[in-house]
Image (tube, rainbow, N blue to C red; front, side, top):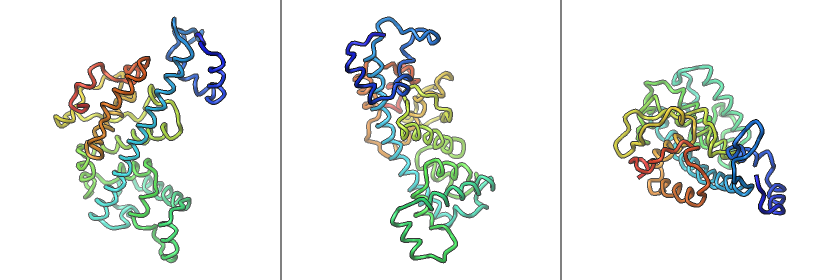
Amino acid sequence: MTIDDEDEAKRQLANINYYRLASYLVPLQADKETRTYKVGTCFETALELYRFDQQLRVMVFDLIERIEVSVRTRFIYTMSLNHSPWWFEDATLFTNALDHAKSLVTISGELERSHEDFIKSHRHRYPKDGRLPPVWKTLEIVTLGTLSRLYGNLRQDLAGRDEIAAYYLVPPRQYFSGWLQSLTQVRNICAHHARLWNRVITAAPKHIKRPQPHLSYGRIRPDTLHKLYPALCVINHLLFTVAPDFGLSTRLADLFAQHPNVDPAAMGFPIEWREHPLWQ
């Protein structure tokens, strides 16, 4: 590997830990054992890959925030209207009592750590109320992971459960819970400024076998199930409801154009990805 500007390389390594940058060097190696690089590889190529990933991460984090806020709001409204302001404390509404109990412990801890004014005000106004604050306050401060676990544990026949998924044009039961789990993992990667572009997403989202025509994304190859592309398909599907004018397809294409050394295939992108209705 060549270094065109040694002083600049030193400056970059003084601000980007070598072991953070090293994960962007691995794809440039011809031999992983000897750590020898492909012919023509230079330090600046790895730095470009790092910058690409940085920009991608910021965009994806922004989109998941929009989706999370929307899902949180829809969850609160739908379940409150179908049940009560304290439905999340009712164990009879959930499939697994132990998982529900663990979720309540997690929620209680998050409430204890919260410094939100509306939580402080609730404690001050209702000091003798043994219940947690009503759902429109409580679920506003829990993490996306907690929301995902609550939704996934709701009884299959429970009023409101399928209604939430339908709002996002997602078939009920089999898909939405897994999608939230996948987005939680991607969100946490972004939040910790970790490498995203060619990351293995262990919580791979299940893809709809018969999507609506305008939301069709083609066949996902088995060897790309755990890459970022399937998660981006899920994000773009949800944006159809949350932010239909965002134009993720164009923004991704522009980002690839700015960084021509980045191979979209390493992220699981098929060559013809923009031809599918979901991305048009």
